[in-house]
Image 1: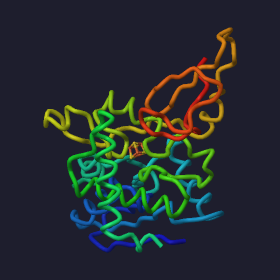
Image 2: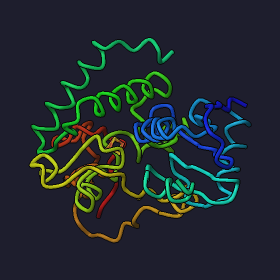
Image 3: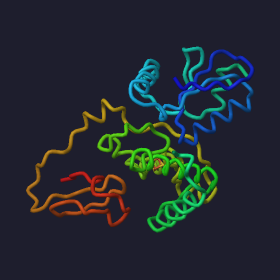
Image 4: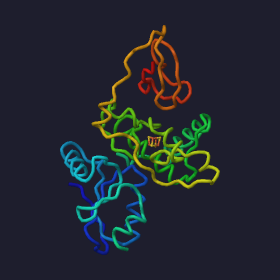
Length: 93
Length: 165
Ligand code: SF4
């Protein structure tokens, strides 16, 4: 799977589901990078077939109302949309 | 594939959308860098799917399923009304243009697939001599046998019309 890894300070397991064309997704990637935390992301629109289905299914385990960007912390808490304040708070920064 | 999009292509489409928006009483986001990035997303999706699927939503790649999110999507006008911007913030309200309101991300209004499938077309209960068609993008109504090829108001294509009455 095409999961990308961005190095930084470890602050729990941060996984982000994004779209390569979405500007809010771009903003959130930049925001995390500027925060300097380690995270992973996957651009779901660049996937195809079974792989795309599988990732969409993964997202649906958190909520039926899936949209992008979706950030998941420690496979538990999730934040939908570009919400810097909420991200900071949930990451304890 | 999408690396091939040139700045000239982006600028050209941006100019066109800006002109059309202003003519129709709409406004593109004045943050030009942000807006041109979205325009690039539209071109990427055009190359990838064959239509301007919304850059901030996941397309299925099946046009019939994605019709409601072909830009401008069915949700632009209600979002402009309620939040002063469309979901991607490509289009913004006059308030934003006047600097009275800032653009911020908004919640997704598009129902999940399961719910969209449940939305059935209205049954024909009318005794009017002609059916009435509604453009789902801008709300334009017309009474004729079939919807027009292109919406005379917002230029949306025929397949964006629904039978209204
Ligand atoms: S109007 Fe805005 S939200 Fe709707 S498809 Fe276009 S860019 Fe996306």
